[in-house]
Length: 110
Length: 118
Image (cartoon, helix red, strand yellow):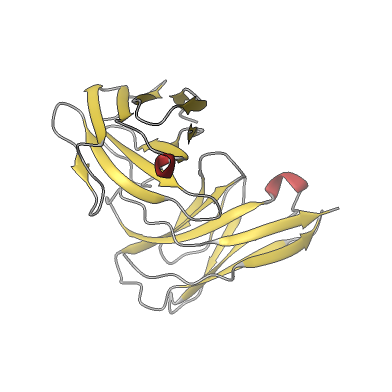
């Protein structure tokens, strides 16, 4: 699996966009970028994933650079309930085992 | 979305006793389930992969005789912590990808079980 690097923490004001970066410079061509989040004392929750095109769903948008060495998860209008640890994971297609790094603790404040 | 449940959500036990944690996929079948452990302020660590109808696969450093895993059906996997000690106190989380997989590798996580060993 590709090694990913994320900032340990970020702050965001409620209602503003939260942009969470992830570096994955060693990602290989068949590895997807997955994002999960974990709200305190809960199990992780899948957010979004992508290979090389930008992706959007009801939760977030994922912007992947053309060289695929980094990506940004965007929560367009952060709410207090988005306060969580966000994990960026590189994973080959069809491979199920998730390896969690330290992630980014996002704190959304009023 | 698919739902994974865990029972119990919280358990306190005395040192030396055994504790069983159940992980159920409520609306889908899972031939594979994963068990994670999370200590305070740390990330999730994969303990083992539970396979329906066969033996579990344990990660390096995880004692298979201490953490017994049984995947008896396509919707149920159990983790039994045998002879629990205070250092086993942790947050145990299971996850499951739907049987047959999906192209998205999306996994569904249970809400976790908080184990406290006195």
